[in-house]
Length: 136
Image 1: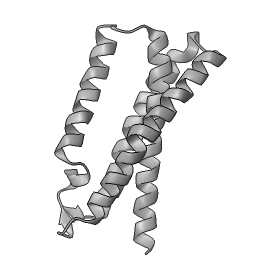
Image 2: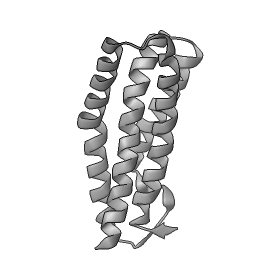
Image 3: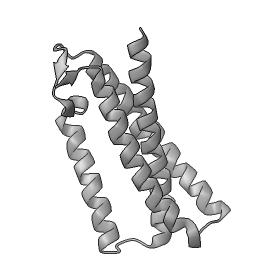
Image 4: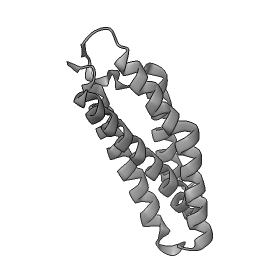
């Protein structure tokens, strides 16, 4: 059990870890595909995921956590069931894509780099929200 606002710190650590690992896979795959077009495409992937998915998700869960009634919470309550389901599908999908080589390495380089950096930024913002909330 943790204090409800510490759920933001748990979320931060989870997202930082996931983002680092996904970005590392993408960046490692970039060795053979480094070029302006691919970098632009990675930036586009980042922007789409940040502004359409992860940015709003951070805001939603920060608000949800702050509105929890009980001060002490189970540490996995940093997400709701729907978000855990989506995360599980993304993890299993990513593992399957790489294990069975369903997409070319160039796609992995472009997509995983943008996605991983967006995930990592979500971790940073969750951490910022935790430290900013604790100062009040």
